[in-house]
Image (cartoon, rainbow, N blue to C red; front, side, top):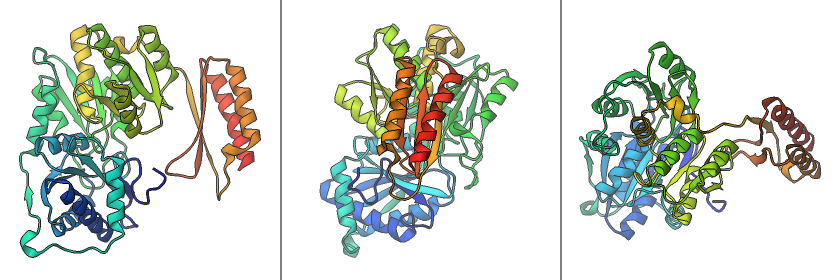
Amino acid sequence: MSDRRYFGTDGVRGLVGKYPITPKFVMELGYAAGKVMAARGTKKVLIGKDTRISGYMLESALEAGFSAAGVDVGLLGPMPTPGIAYLTKTFRAEAGIVISASHNPFYDNGIKFFSQSGEKLPDAVELAIEAELDKEMGCVDSSELGKATRIDDAAGRYIEFCKAQFPSDLSLNGMKIVVDCANGATYHIAPKVFRELGAEVIELASSPNGTNINDGCGATSMDMISTAVVEHKADLGIALDGDGDRLMMVDHTGYVIDGDEAIFIIASHELQAGRMRGGVVGTLMSNMGLELALADLGVPFARSKVGDRYVMEMLLKNGWKLGAENSGHIINLNHTSTGDGIVAALNVLTAVCQSGKTLNELRGGMTMLPQVLVNVRFEGDTDPLAADTVAASVNQVNEKLAGRGRVLLRKSGTEPLIRVMVEGPELEEVTALANEIADAVKKAC
């Protein structure tokens, strides 16, 4: 990804009003993408967005760019990222475009693309779009301009797709579920899915106003839903992020279940049902407890770089079906082509219903190891990770852990930070060891 100027691991993203998230650039991006899409086949794309106030502006800019390139646009309105990926396939569109900055605050936004197969765009296509951006923007003849239409039943189509991922012989009748929509793209979808499957649903953060997306709610802020589950005596809680591709859950005690524990529950249930094929892909940040628990079940485990894009790449390479990030991106290729928070929740609920166990009991099969993360800020062109003193500190910690834990150092992809992560059996020990390495990093900055 280093040779890209605009596309990161998850499309083009930034602060609204600052390059490249400006109306002018986004229009040019739509035109460049449209030229590439038009040359590849069907001249039709879908555009969906989350609930950020800037989504209207960026949607109009993209629409203008695609129209100038001679590409028809189907406007989906507010729609979860995985819903846009699904509808891109069903409408046989050349691409699906998502206007969202996922779990970020409202003042950020971004543009990401899905291919006709509902997967992230191949590298070659992203590079072709970047090359087209170097050229001057033009406009096709008036008779060839793309048309824009509003797809009014998009939400209903996706709701039915989600419900179809839950076994038809099961029901959520008698179950009380708290659903936190993060004031994001699932606000008009997720509560209906679980309610129509029979659950009593208590809604949280389902009233977006353009600026309250991810604001103290959703998968990145779990205190509110943990409290609500206990207060309402609910069976469990489901928290989604702003664009609906992340899932975090809460059991009836208020305990937070992250992507590692959720994928363990899904994998162990698939194994018990005789449907498990291959292994599970995690990331460098996945808890060692997941690796150990899967090993006890005889399920292979592999780690990719951080990012659901890389999880998907390793799944396809290995021919496996299940992967996850601990942050809540959960991919089950038996059901979807990308991470889908609602579908992942339904996969966990399938395990709950078919096993007759509570979520609390199902998570008991895996023990999370204490994991401590320390961020160290650095400036300039220095590379603390290249320092001999840092390497020596890491080696000393590895010797102290002696195979009982892990050490991971990596640069943040969005901030000038070195992330120092240490995990092991005892919280006090790993905290001290993480600070020991962080001190060495600070001295090398």
